[in-house]
Image 1: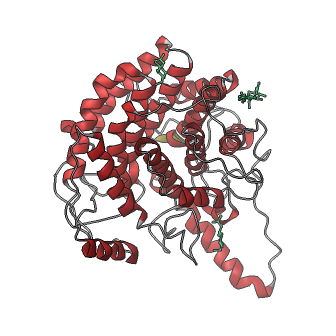
Image 2: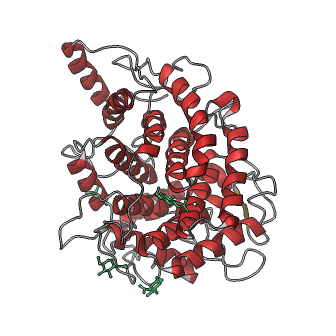
Amino acid sequence: MVRVPNKPLLAALALAVDGVYGALVADLDDPASIKQAAAQVAEDLLSFYRGDEPGWVPGILPGPPPDGDYYWWQGGALWGTMLDYRHHTGDNTYDPIVLQAMIHQVGPNEDFMPPNWTASMGNDDQGFWGMSAMLATEVGFTDPGDDEPQWLALAQAVFNEQTHEDRRVASGRCEWGLRWQVYPSNTGYNYINTIANACYFNIAARLARYTDNQTYADYAVRTWDLVKDLGYISDDWDVYDGAHLPYCNDTNRAQFSYNAAMLLQGAAYLYNYTNGAEEWKVRIDGLIDRMIEVFFPGGVAYEPSCEGAKCNTDMKSFKGYMHRWMGNTMQLVPHTREKIYPVLKTSVANAVKQCSGGPNGRFCGFHWTTGVFDGEIGAGQQMNVLGALLSLLAPDSAPPLTNATGGTSRGDVNAGSDEPVLPTFATVTVADRAGAGILTALLIAGSLSAFAWMSID
Ligand SMILES: *[C@@H]1O[C@H](CO)[C@@H](O)[C@H](O)[C@H]1NC(C)=O
Ligand SMILES: *[C@@H]1O[C@H](CO)[C@@H](O)[C@H](O)[C@H]1NC(C)=O
Ligand SMILES: *[C@@H]1O[C@H](CO)[C@@H](O)[C@H](O)[C@H]1NC(C)=O
Ligand SMILES: *[C@@H]1O[C@H](CO)[C@@H](O)[C@H](O)[C@H]1NC(C)=O
């Protein structure tokens, strides 16, 4: 069951007073109409966010369970979505909220590893925040004050730490694979999954294009080769979820849209960075054709590995990323528009059609193929439809900046700490027992948390 926070209710009451009540509508041939619908979906999305209110933690959606539905990484994903919203619509209303949120979560080493979230810190979780910092760099989001961490340096910090050998497999068939979890104490430390490696690939590709530094591209290529050699990308361009040490051959063949989409977007950056290298064109075209078959049956986004049964809260947000990153691909690889745009359009039309629920009658559900609101609202559901609407605006909006084309964010090639130091805890005294018990519970809970389904064979 999903709790309806008070905030959507309050927003709805305000709407009722305004006399605006009714299902979401958008004329997909009219950018102004898409923007208007996006503004409404964004407003409803942020009704799930409380971090700008006293007593709540800035940057995160209510959680993690049991305190709320959302894990830490989804905060990072939320701000990426809002940065795309700002970029594609020109609406700066939420700038102060986004700025406060992202800066609050950078942590003491300025690397998106805040100690509060150690117990469930995956490389993919850190990666999602790093990608949002990279996006802030590329869309020219307000640079933080001089005494605060800078967007580009934050993305570089994530890249540098994840390049470090402590995060990687030392030898064997999966040598140099990026582990799912950062800390050995977490379940999933032995899972070498696509999403963690794809996040790293994505950030590396974007750093290469932004800074015009080949070293980043080399690491991105090495990551692609590794994931391909392990068979996580099949010869038919299926993208699987991952496999375990020691041999990485027990491949979990579940396909989730964000895995393929994150590889696609990274490949698009490398295509653009290499001025249209043929090998990246082949990979991009292969991935797109297969993604349309697997994730858009009948032209409408569908999450095949869970939607027929039950998707968890994390999975309920993947469609939005897929649409946004395909939108971005159209910008960086112009020939893909012909194939991508028509599919996104039918998908978005169906996404909008089912947004007729929640307290104001325009919240969205998760199931788009039915055309009917499914009765459950959530931040993921709103992010999905927002990401979908934005993807249709992408072709006509400014492509990601680079340092040479107007980007202003200051970088630091040495950002991040040298290695992920495990947090140290004071010696446990009798008086601390209760606290230690809580800590143990936290570590256990954490080890089962974000993306936990993936480590289940
Ligand atoms: C960490 O938790 C404390 C206590 O809830 C909170 O005040 C602080 O804002 C949190 N910091 C982050 C980065 O989440
Ligand atoms: C970015 O461009 C500025 C000049 O506009 C230059 O001083 C700086 O070194 C460049 N940074 C990188 C990482 O290339
Ligand atoms: C390019 O990136 C690498 C990897 O972070 C770094 O070591 C190197 O100093 C960078 N080169 C330049 C010219 O900034
Ligand atoms: C790279 O992206 C830019 C911006 O969208 C685009 O104009 C250019 O054609 C792309 N490069 C290639 C080789 O397609």
